[in-house]
Image (cartoon, protein in one colour):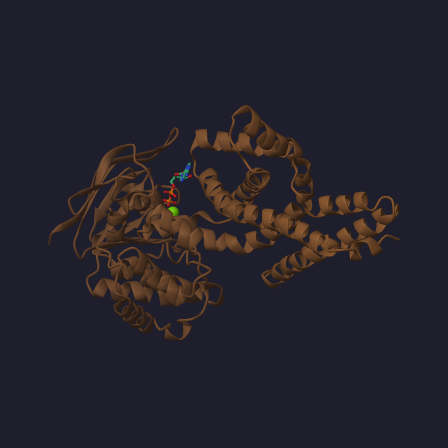
Length: 222
Length: 246
Ligand SMILES: Nc1ncnc2c1ncn2[C@@H]1O[C@H](COP(=O)(O)OP(=O)(O)O)[C@@H](O)[C@H]1O
Ligand SMILES: [Mg+2]
């Protein structure tokens, strides 16, 4: 079936390391996306026409463009055309953050819409500055709504990290391919075992996160 | 007594609709002014401009010698001087009653923590809600929420308190517990502008009554004359709409 090739040498360790790369890229990207996305969402909520239009265009670009194209654009485009020296990992974090920020800002904007006007007005009339109002009153009220959704974003990002091997990052799927290649002569049918193992690894990484989000959603329902 | 608020020729429009039409008034320190008028005549808009929640299209609002407008740099300092309580429930749902009271003093005035907490407890005691200190707003009745909203405004030591139909959304049996708090504030000499439809209460609390219609002051005066000898037809008609006699 092909499982035996995984026991050769340090193949299992290499797979796990590949998974760690995928997790690292998505975690860093999500953390940055939450901060930037919240800021963008708040900005979109303020009634500044030009800014709103720009952010809308940004959202639309992210929605339309395949992540892979963005990845190539940033990695090959930036490194070759502009002479900026980006590591493949940095390039992927930039692209994932670009995507995550768009999704988060849309989430934040939607949640902000649900906050009654009176919450803003009573904050202001107590003398809070706009910054304090968002910090202490408005954002804390949308966080509960946002946490399950941002966890969902993390799992989707972990899944999508399989794309980053296209720009040469050795993540779990790439390791799997390397193992299969290296054993093509001795174990020509290794593919099934290796990919099934990878499937299980992704599952083990994403399932607890997914459960956590369901749990939080239930807990905060009322 | 010294003048605390002056409104000069204040105008406010929403597109074509003139909501406030060159309205002028002034309020002296310690005075309780009650504003009545038909629904939609501009009462809420007037109070909101006094707290710079609305921009204005003409005239000016001067609070203790300082001109208020929403473009001001020191807006939040001006707003500290003016406390406001609204008709709809406005407590912060994710904060306990106690945190609702202490948040603004601690963050805006950078007040001493111990002093602030002591004051919050004393105010809760005063409105009979000590036991609700650690409750969340959703665990309170409407009347209790409004009492907390009033003392939350007091925590900022406002020079002027604006109350906009604070009992209009309450069940009838809760109206009195809230208005009693307002009466006690009037007795201790707070400066207030109150918008209400509770005419009995208005009679009891007002130093001066103002009747607004169509964005203008139609009639004003001490409550006794205002209610017993209205001079204008419009006020007569308005007062009559509250009575059930033939
Ligand atoms: N944000 C707004 N946009 C447009 N019209 C408004 C707005 N707020 C209030 N109005 C209108 O202004 C008028 C006065 O409103 P308001 O001050 O709330 O009246 P009152 O408090 O006396 O019932 C009403 O006709 C109302 O429909
Ligand atoms: Mg009103």
